[in-house]
Length: 166
Length: 362
Ligand SMILES: [Zn+2]
Ligand SMILES: [Zn+2]
Image (cartoon, rainbow over all chains, first blue to last red; front, side, top):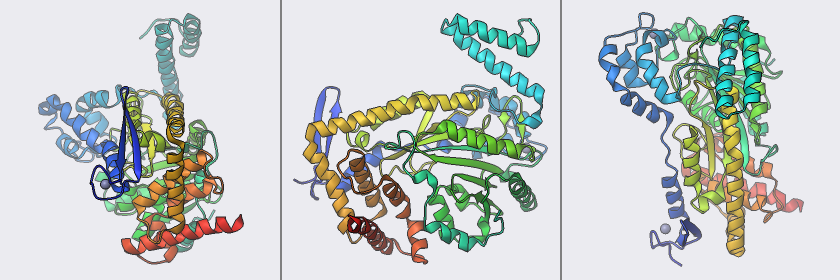
């Protein structure tokens, strides 16, 4: 049997494709089968994703276009074209431009994960509280009130007061 | 600690064996080859590498290297200065998953520390000042997290990381900010590829905010039906929550792959067996094999072993062959640079010998 794609080589790969309820047989040579697989699995790289995201949050460009970091010298426009920041301070300097970008990228702009021990106990507590509040919201959404009450007690305990701050 | 070990000797030592993560053990290891986590960290009060001058890069490298040494992360950790290493050796380290492609191709002072088991590696002056990586065999993201978290704890006692309470660990690229964590699982999905159901997996995975990549990360081609699934977001979810999301989706993919395999068998067992045996036969007799072809053949045989069609070859041997037949490894094996045509011959010879050894043991 000849390969149905190139019609030259001997078909050694026999694929069964199921589209909806229709079954289709395909007979291909190794080479064509691999090409098909490669096409199916073309995946954008994170850098490509980043560039497209940066372009999507264009509106703030006018406001940010003159901003440059006094520490490392990078301008917001440099960042936009290369996708890399120059120093930790840039997260503060370019905050306005970064926040919509982070929101699009991560669906959030607030860290809730690990805290380095050097960053202090206060911060650790703050993050733990934040995470507990997230969990509380989830529990309430799921109408798991037992868990919600549990979490509420933990939050009170950790924050040391009963005020309903948000 | 062998921090000053001669580099050439150390890299040659590696050619005789492979990392522990290729053992083919651990949960779901018929389909899940490995679990990997990496953390991106930067030193406070220094620019990120794209803006650092040579002097700053040297300072950062020296500082992190010293702190790694003091932290006694694993017993046999040793450090390689990548600027001192030949391109073939760097390629070899990429194929081992000890450094990234970007780190191999980078410039300026930079290095990597890793232990004999090759479970842990610490890249210094990659895209971020420090990237810690832990890989384990099979589906073991929790264990992997435990290990890397401990290493990170040891280091943060000695290094002042760039960190903010709002944005977490500050990284050169905002796609990594927050946890700085990328957790990934490497899967072997030949039946989903064959039946063209792999796209459905991609769609489901992308909806969860996860991404699918090839064997060597960013933008690499998918070969040998090997896929890496990892988190895209790093901010707004804790490390545990991110791991939970991946942990939730993997069993669904593995059972989908098993279903696809069963379907292939029940539809036409002879045809599937024929494909597997032909691939095995090809590996045993071919005189020249390209890198693409071998990935494909190994993938078929690996599935054949999982399905009990082939019983005389160990999973570990197969997993290793995926790595040992890569261009950098073959060139290390031969001790010289090779053209692609030369590599194809040596690749075929190497595999034939490995499989003959198995035959003679029977
Ligand atoms: Zn063809
Ligand atoms: Zn800056």
